Length: 513
Image 1 (spheres, rainbow, N blue to C red):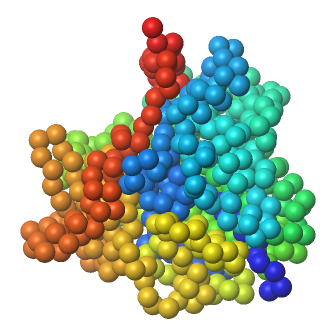
Image 2 (cartoon, one colour):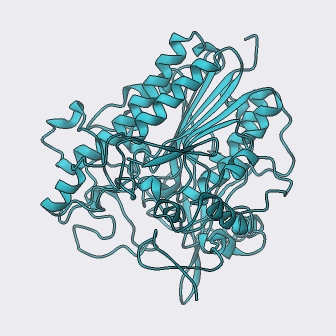
Image 3 (tube, rainbow, N blue to C red):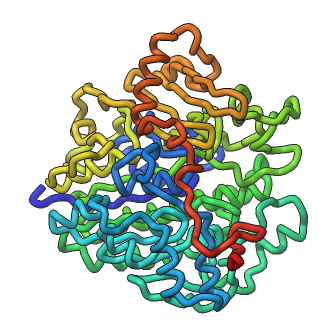
């Protein structure tokens, strides 16, 4: 290889690994994503975070999400004030900057690493983290080009009336709905189904726009090293798709809602295919590293009364408490088994909420068809990218490069636990498969300990049989949380805009008296 490789990083949104055929999906195939698995490495113990904002912050900073001040998020929806004319774009940007992380702090972000090596960088899709961003923030983080959504709430719809391109607000003709064409949250009435398929004001699907910009970027920069980051909205709900995919259209085992959700996964697979075909056509496939993963574990958007529930056991009717009882596909009615047999879903720190698909194809470096059980996290990608680009990793990062594993494996392991937060508290996972969870409850706190290598479903809490191990891992976890387990909960990272109050749903705002 005569030059440093191009790098393409594709981040799915709320994609449980069980939704991919290379991880065992039985109801449909994801042939293009599978090309990354057969042509590269498939990781089996890769971790994101419990939901999108911390996972994206971890990816872009190379830090885990249990540091106080390491990342922040709002409730989202502030850009609706631009849409309805209550504020100007400049006013919203300045308001966001009042609560954002200090742009002058000496932090090195993901895209700045390859830029030091002469790469051109681009981010196309669901931009940044924290539920609202600005042109200034995106540029500060090292992106030469960006196109997509600035607001998380807008990302819940797939027909945006406008997107942002390098700070410019770009209108999308035919998309006239202020809510970006967001669909109803559940498919329980015929009226909701009709609304979901009403195409008035829903002319252009956002993924089509992203595909166009991605292909244009690849063609324009084929002759110089590039780093392209595509954080897709797919398959995050509420479910909406231009058409049901032929692969599932006539499947008698699936409801209409389940077919539509599967079609969103297959639409993402189509994008991966477009990218792989284009780099083949451009003659740069052999010099391009392609990474695919998800921000967090599985989310069930196709709930339907009596068939699928994410909140209670359908066999007994008993609600899950998230501590002693938790979601499993076979108990909650998930026909897809999107969390691949693991416990829990998005927002939890059970394996089904945080363990993610992770695939890397790099011709000439990564052995095709390799399956790796190396422990990795999304925040390990920053130091790995530094190795790929031939740049020294900035000091103080939590991430650990897995370049040695990509080149064939040294058997060393990660050497440090993976750390992640959740609403009930932080957790860690070690190289040898031990998982310790700190659980914060209203009346008491407790630890839970599982050995994942023999207890994949987290059914046997062995905290009392391994007291010394609990003490040791508890000290490590507390240290990782900067001495306060509360830092391992999202609540301490949430910030509020001065002078604004929420009213009603997430996107409604009101000036404070």
